[in-house]
Amino acid sequence: MRDKLAQEQRKLSRKKKRSSNWHKQRTRVAKIKEKVANQRKNFLHHKSRELVTTYDAVIIEDLDMKGMSQALMGTVLSIQCIMTGIVLVVSKCRFH
Image (tube, rainbow, N blue to C red; front, side, top):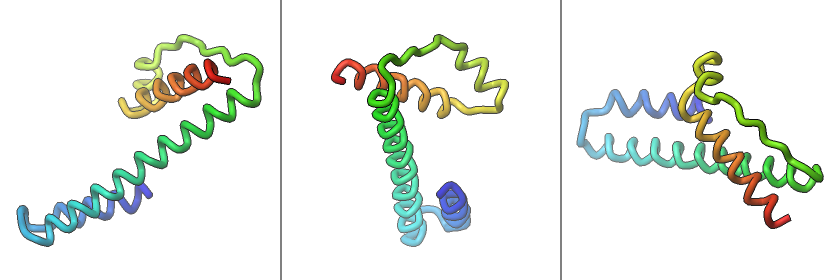
C-alpha cells in the first residue's frame, strides 16, 4: 500500500497545480492515505485486543521512545503508533 501511495504522489507532483486532473489525483492520494491510516488503526485494535484476552497481566515498560526512534531511523509516526497502542491496551484492560 505504501508503494501505491508513493506512486500516486509522484503522479500528483507531475500534474499542473489547480487543474481538474490535479484535483482528481489529490483525492486519489487522500483516499489511499485514509486507507493506510485505517489499516494502522485496525492493526492496533486487533493486537491490543489479543494482548488483553490472551494474558492475565499486561505490563508496560516506560522506555525512551524518542531515543529509540532516532537510533532506529524511525519517524514521529512510529512513536505515535506505539503510544496509541499503549492507550488502547490500557483502555481495553479496564473493561476486560
